[in-house]
Image (cartoon, rainbow, N blue to C red; front, top):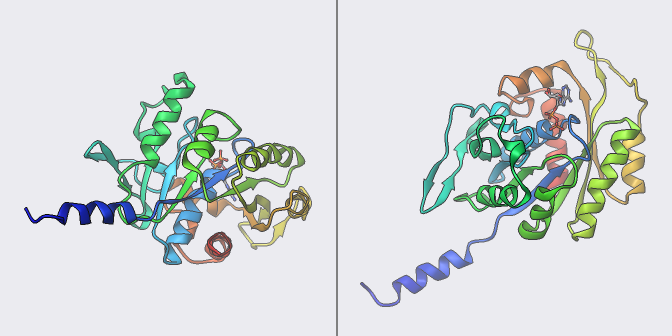
Length: 260
Ligand code: ADP
């Protein structure tokens, strides 16, 4: 062996930039946090970023379905997991890859934290930006995430209803306490997009989330309407951000603000 070569390799490995983690969070479930995470990852990828996606939502891991990678199983190399390929080849790992369906809820805090770390510390290769779909609320995974893995920022998802916004403020305070900067708030299911004429009506009024974002001192990143297409395409493993149209445009606009 040539003296010094190993040293150079070690130096190169050490120089590799750490992953920049973006946590996508919400105060409660069902607001579209997973849908936004998948579409945000895809939109960021299409903007030219080297993106990976982690599904840390242990209580309802849905990214394998959203990203059309349900049939894949991650392999391991040197004790590290190798991500599977989701929509557009985006590398991803999910809690669903570590657990048998239905068994996740029996896990205790430390196990959950370890599982999350296995996903984050996987062999992400050239990936530079990791979108992490957090579980709803403020539990053990959230604590492990903010304390151990130090996201560079957090995106909060909320629906227009007041209740969801109150829940969202709890998620915000968790990140604030840990010193994780707020990237901003996305309002999902903001108005109903008529599948026939495309007109958007606002059963819950409009502007509430934008005002709330201002009150919480964070940027407002945009609104995504409640639209049958979004649910249908997402369920089919072909999220709208991967295609063309008004929804793809809306997710791209959000991704541009997130990346800025
Ligand atoms: P969460 O991750 O917050 O629990 P999901 O992303 O799983 O929420 O969304 C819950 C349900 O609502 C899913 O069936 C999803 O397809 C649907 N959904 C999410 N956002 C929208 C939207 N903007 N329009 C239509 N359906 C949506």
